[in-house]
Image (cartoon, rainbow over all chains, first blue to last red; front, side):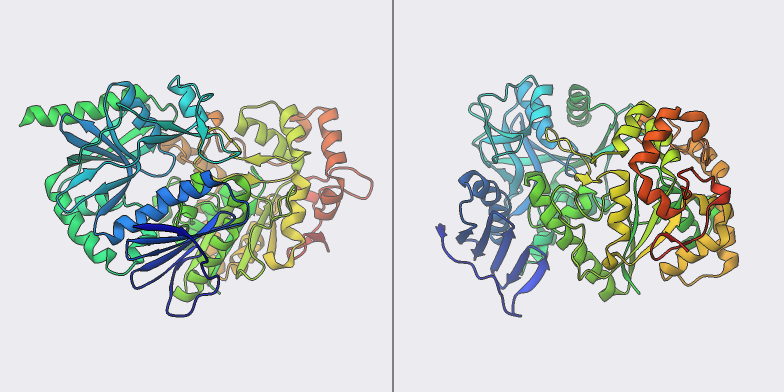
Length: 272
Length: 304
């Protein structure tokens, strides 16, 4: 693929469909506009033109390039793309998804501390064989989450200037192998309880719950993506164990959550 | 009309009560009222809501960038509502203008109407203190200066930052920008003159309804009923600091018992102009009780 700096038009003709206020699509192209950072024009899952705002810093461009832009590219290349993390458990992959702010990256860091490898954080790419492909060897962590995990943020770089969110690089903790996805957990939180709850999702609901974990749902409006997603999602739903796990809102209880999730996986293993 | 209807207020000014009324008005069976599933459409600053209309993650944006994208999101939501002939009733605690930066909450061309709920700041203060688990002294001080909700810069909060400004600034920002298409509802009028107040608000929201339906919805939303629902099944929107008592007293004019003279004087000084305008203060500078409030023009929030 090629990534170049160039011009991306401000005014687009009617042949471009507006996906939302910040993205438009036409055929196998998408334009993503991140205000005050850059416009990105992606074609055929292959070529990216970046039109940066004058004097914008590189780190800011990188965040959106490696996030939304790569997400769009991977959708165009016929992968399933989920918003979450991918953790290696034995030789299989656990994917944890959930709404923004539920604690996915904090959970990723927690698994690392327990000695697990991480395949991906934020953008999880699953190929046509239902296997997760290694992403980028880093996690993005907020200051408070790092503190909770006793990770010192002083040596770390900020993901963008003026933000208290940091890039935590991964070395041995990063899994470089493509491995089959075996479990998917959808996280939620509940104010009314101090307990963890888990429900195994069976039947037709599996498709709906799995679809909730899609990376950038607006990208479903790109040509062909939704139809391919339906097919991939059905295939994946057939091969995985899917759980909805609720944690207490009042107190994150990271270790408790990890124990709970690992417990579900082990119980399933024993039941077989 | 369809599109977006803002239910805007400073905290502790009757927003939830109004939304409960609206849920009862629009719903079928008031016995089935679930405080944790109100009919209205979430809060404007809900990260999940805004993220649905971005092509990137709000968690990767700086505050000033978030301020830039939000108005375009709301314009889009409003346009969608108009195209689908649907109405969205969305709660807002933001001031209409950011006191520090001048950024507006919505674009001037967004099709929007607003119900602005307001309450005597002398009663807001003790309620706000209880809500936050802080002292009344702190609440009075906060109301007198710029403040913002969900403003942490070190962790990701479920809501985006909501700049509120001082209490006075908040009121004036929604009332003095004609594009908000505002209809002012005083908390005290919801208590003292419920039928005409709630009916007027429903009409501003373009809801086709009858006096009887409004009466029923008012009855179903009475404080004691809501309070017992909270005891029964909790209220998810409440902060943990309120300790199961989000619905605390639901009364007006308790400030004489709850605020010291010094605290009362500070509020009367900090918010003199707006209190005069809304009828909460008389020409001699004395506070006016809920019972004696003069009528206001809801389009301007000024005494008639």
